[in-house]
Amino acid sequence: MTLLLSLALGLLGSASALAQNIIHTERSLYRNIVISEESGERCMKFSRLYRGSRQSCQLLSDPDRLLFPYTRMMMGSLYLAPRPQQILIIGLGGGTLPSALAKVLPGSDIDVVEIDPAVVRVAGTYFSFKPGARTHVHEEDGRVFVKRAMRSGKTYDLVMLDAFEQDYIPEHLLTREFLEEVKSVLKPDGVLAANTFSASRLYAHESATYAAVFGSFYNLKGSNRVILLRRNGLPPMDELQRNAAAVEASLQPLGMASGDLLPMFVTKPDWSPDTRVLTDRYSPSNLLNGS
Image (cartoon, rainbow, N blue to C red; front, side, top):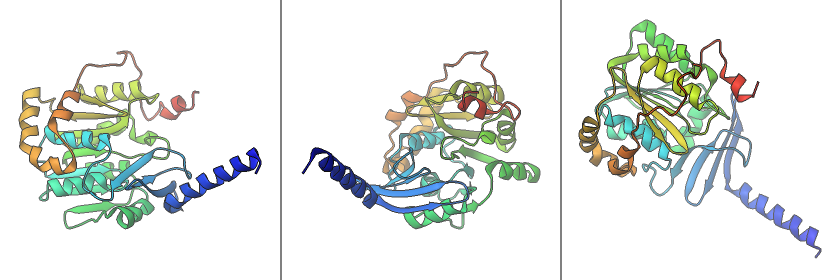
C-alpha cells in the first residue's frame, strides 16, 4: 500500500469516526444545528459539521451538572439575589440555564425567549428540556419580547442574556438602546447576567456600553466573560459571601462551589475610558468585519 493511499484511508477513517458521533443535523431558518456525542457528552453546535464552538453540552451520566464554566458564572447571579421570583432568559440553546434554575428555584416563574423553533424542539428531544407550569417558552426575537414587556409593565428580578448566532451575539442585542430596554424591565433591585466572549473584538465596546447604561459591574472572565450587575448598585463582597452561603447546598449538585466562583468577582475596568459605546446606529458588524 502506498503512503498516499494509506494517508487517504486514514483520513477517511477519521471522517467516518467523526460522522458516527453526529446524531442529528438540521438547517433551520436561522442556523445549522448539529447534535453530537463524544466521551459521554452530548453537545449542540450552531455551525457546519465539525466546525465551530459548542453552544450547549450535557453529561449523559449526570445531566444536572453544569459542564461549561460560563453556565456556572451565569448561575453566580444568585450571589447577587438568591431568591428571584420572576426570571427572564433570552436564548435557549440546550436549555441548561432554565433547567438549572427550575431545579434550584422551583417556586420561580421563568420566561425563556428563543427565536428559533428548531432549537426549542431539539432542546426537548436531545437535552430533556421541558417547559412546565412555571417555565414558559416564547418563540420570538428577544428584543421584541423585551419591548412588549416594557409596554405591559412586566418586570423581572433576574434577566439572563445568552443569545448567540453561529458566530456571536446578534448585533441588535448588544447596543445601548437594547440595554436601556432591558434595564426598564428590571425591578429596582433586579439582577442582570450577560454571557459574552473574553477574546471578542467587541470586548471593550461591550464593556463601555454596559458601563454607560448600568455603571459598575462584576466582570467574571474565563474563555467566556460574564457580566453580573444589580440595577440599584453592586452588593459588596460580604453580601455576596452571605448569599453564596445561603444557596451553596442547592448549587452543589450542579457542580458549583462558591470558593471557585467568588474570587472571579472583580470590578476593575480593563478597557479604555474613551471606548466608543455600541448603538443601534453604530453597528457592531462593522468591527467584526474589520471595516
